Image (cartoon, rainbow, N blue to C red; front, side):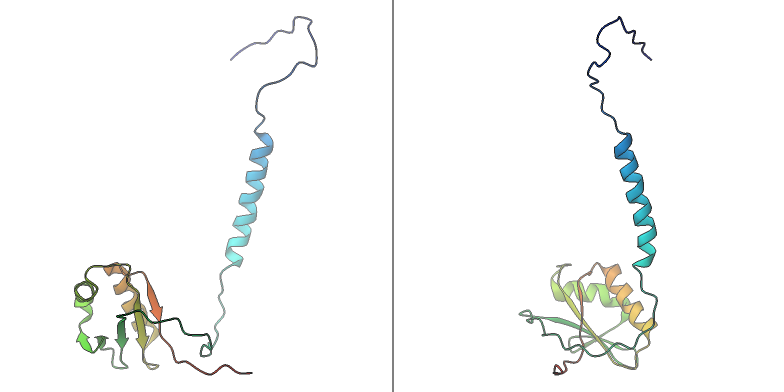
Length: 141
């Protein structure tokens, strides 16, 4: 703690200290704005999604397809795989490259909870790049 005595000099002397109060005020206002806006960004409305008319992305040279049949059987390409062995089987198929895109397709009759279990198994195995495969439909004019 210091003491500054004015010895009769200039009353309008320069002050070389940084005033951070306006900066803190701006940061607090931004914090409040983001705290209010963040819950508004989530969507909690049930919708029946239509088929996509987007132009399909080019296929990689050797795509890895993971399929779920209506009876909850998993297939990696043409080979059936158990859910417990999904990670090691994917590692063998992709040669350990975790950044490989896994193309995930499921039958219409598969329960959403079953889809999420497979997605969780992919994430637990370290495969975060997942492409969802759907039917291609002609664009309506």
